[in-house]
Image (tube, rainbow, N blue to C red; front, side):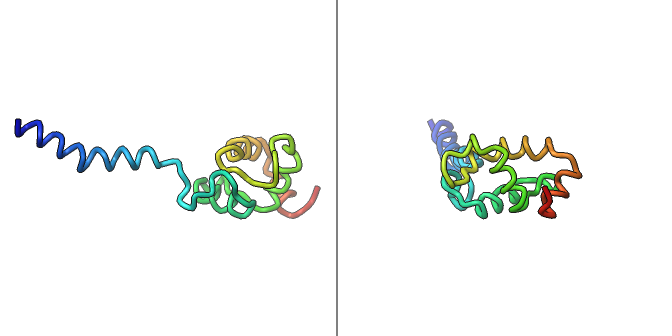
Amino acid sequence: MQLIELRVAFYFKYMNQSFRRFINRDQSPAGISQNATKEEFLTEHNRLSPLSLQATIPLLSRFKIEKASIFKNSTWSIDKLRRPFILWLTSLTAEEKKNIKQGQA
């Protein structure tokens, strides 16, 4: 009986905390996953991304122009837009990225 009680105590002390961390791992700390502004999306995306996938405001603006069909309103949902943004970003050549960052066509 004591062994069962020890297992239950172990579970509630350690496993339950690990489970909560696992469940909440994809939630942004700022709670901005659904209704983010462009600046909040940029901050959260860059926090989660390696240097090779870092974004800028001009890149986000161009993405919104080229992929207007996936924007339902003016909000930048991290859950819905981050994956398409990364796919779009990785499809750009280095020259295209450079031109967008410099504000050229």
